[in-house]
Image 1: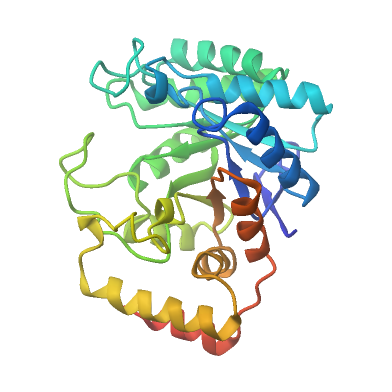
Image 2: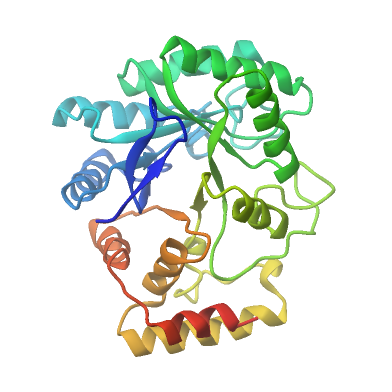
Length: 328
């Protein structure tokens, strides 16, 4: 396993594995026995970075979420897991009422919600301190100073270690970090966005914004990460829910542009050269690229996880890197 440092403050920074394990469907679609087997294998392989959220996975059974956190809490207790595993969770996108979609609205990022969410997540996970706590989505209805202050207060109190942000525009991340810095407060150190080797269009209006896809690592965010190399980006859905390799999981219209065909061809060529799978090449590209991401992978079986774990040690040649990066 390879490792990375997250966090800019020496007092709170942590070492985490270069591959993160997503627990989104654990406790709902993935049963407890299978979930425990996947988590055990991940830890055995040196994995130390598990991701969840307080709203996972509400849409499966029409709840408000929490099933994933509670399962992770049971796994921690049954295995005697301590600080060696960093568990990240999120707040802000839990539905206001039990639901299977977001039509009834979400809690948002007020100071009250942030504090109550942190308390509930600590209880679910069975921990005194949340290792990494994300602002899951943007909340234009709450002043950014309130949100920044509320997250920072939890760090100051010691009930949260590090802060992260997901699904925000790059300018919002920069503004929030500036507010925190000017006030001498801890700010966001980890950025979680959708990112993969195939580039998706970001201009189509989203559910939350007429301006496009705020949760996708577009050019503005990638440029920001180049300028702020101390920030650690995490890539969710890096394998596109199986679309790289499964005919029954077609790419959506957001990938309907000439660059997709060129990149698919480059991936297949490098996979054939290395003897690796296409999925493994994608993960290796994310981990070792000029903007190194931590891929966040899900798994419904130990075999799926093992395929992803093997990507951490995949070494690409200079020529293979050049071929992948040049495809547009």
